[in-house]
Image 1 (cartoon, rainbow, N blue to C red):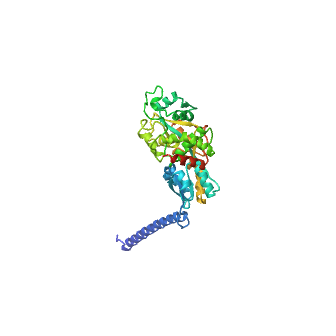
Image 2 (image 1 turned 135 degrees about the horizontal axis):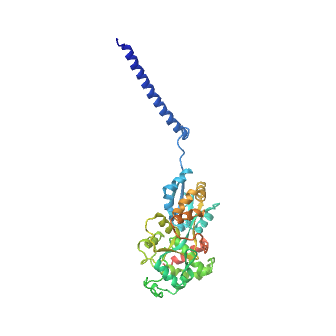
Image 3 (image 1 turned 180 degrees about the vertical axis):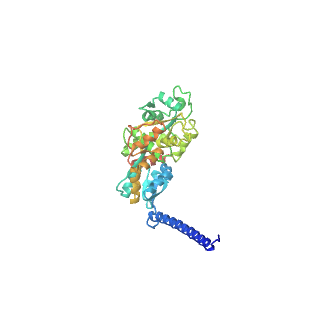
Length: 374
């Protein structure tokens, strides 16, 4: 049979048309999908930009705000939060707040002053941390015999009045009866930070002045009464560091020899346990001063965007859970409770013996009087 040349040509042409059509349909489909995605994300417009909110914060919260998970939560709410760290006293007295949307010091007295000076309508206290004494098992045994450490409901307390009595006598560690575990020839003192710079030192002053006065110091007569005793607690230490991280890092690395008793935020200890970086060893213990004070991290909105940050930190469950992983006690206590249970960490669920610090002006006067003696 004679082969029809036109039949081959027509078959080839049909195949070419089909191939071209197939490619065209595929391209059209891809364009359609891309268009659907593009227009579905904003009708052809650029994705909404995040609103930048600027704040000045106590340095203890810097790691929290720098965490990518925290930034992602704020981004879901349309915010990009940028922060500068500063000392809480510095935020209240020396920082130019005009370029910030919120101020977030680590103490209620500092926030109170900012709120009053800036006439802010409200404040937010999304998390807090009680002041604690970080120490070691042999020191706990020694101070239990000396009547300073007592057992509480699931935790141990540090009797501030008993401690002040020993400190007033200039008691050295090697003078404690039956002391064979820490016979150091130095005064029995809690290591703190420099009262001229640090919020934790101000919180320590709030505790010790309350006990020395028999109540919150609220007059200049009471200040004069307690200053000789409380000043010695700082001055007799010698050199003190400006940030709470300093003595706490010494506690972690240098151990009992250098820092047998260290004033710290509970959050610092819990944060290290949560990290699981092996810096907290089995012989390390927390003591809760009786009485103690809460370092209330209090946000003062200076503009509307700052108010949004305060609202989210207080109400957003995801931010609450993240704050608890950094050791903070949160507005919803369940977040902190879940974290410490997961890590099998024994801390009090509720701390009963908590006192209020003096007003900002009173605390500042006492701190300045101590600073003049350095």
